[in-house]
Image 1: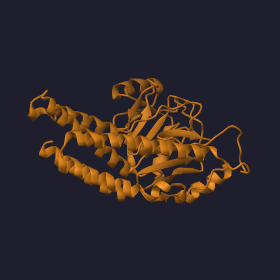
Image 2 (image 1 turned 180 degrees about the vertical axis):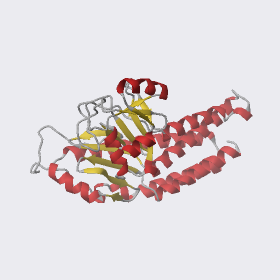
Image 3 (image 1 turned 90 degrees about the vertical axis):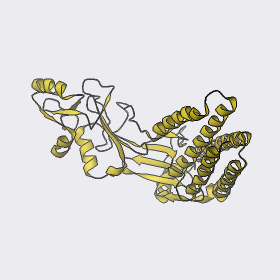
Image 4 (image 1 turned 90 degrees about the horizontal axis):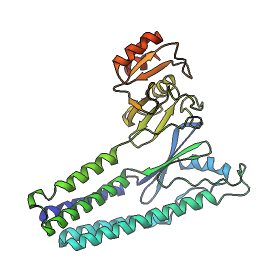
Length: 337
């Protein structure tokens, strides 16, 4: 391995020290009675967040009380990460490509084992219910999602890596790219000076995808508005707030999304996107930075916001004549509603 590759491996390995000071995973719950959400953060050696409130709610459906004793892994994860850092430094020091490959294989095995372990905990937690619980729904279990979103009764449950988890994922991607570069050099497929070109492209794609947060498709007739709690029915007026952690708030009317934001239910610095359904193409979201609105009493939206989103100003101007409405951008609409 080249000196550059060995230095990069060493830095990536040392970056894992950050996982000792950052939450590794989070589970977030949103319900009508808790619109701001409840979060449980999982660290290498502890739990944090609103665990006791979650336990109080779960008691009614017979789920076990969550505590650190449920996770024996919290007793030794710090040592596993420590060993992983040490192995990375050894790989950098020795500088052998095969040793780096073995390190990657060990990483994959460890990652798969961790996900299986987490799935088994979630299965047991969601299925082993107290038969004397006040609320019982025959045949229904409450296993939280391993990764992603899942509807549990009136709760929206989200499960994703937290900051520490992304540090680990990023380090693994760097290890893989370094190995790929060294592999290409060894086979002399490309000149040495361009050996990093393709791997850097892969890294760019990974970073872009890893940081991207996208709106979710609205399930009309099923999803609830996060502000008024009404079922979202009309596809012409849907909208969403997407946070930087991938959490999605859905709304049935421009009035609701504005009131949600004005109430400060989600901090502005945490928001990645605010999107509105295109009034003329109800399978397409429009970003609030580019969208134009018509506000007209003739629109008759669910909560009387009476604002519809259009992709460009020219189209909005044409439709405004028919609808006898005013044309506004997002800032003006926000201040109007």
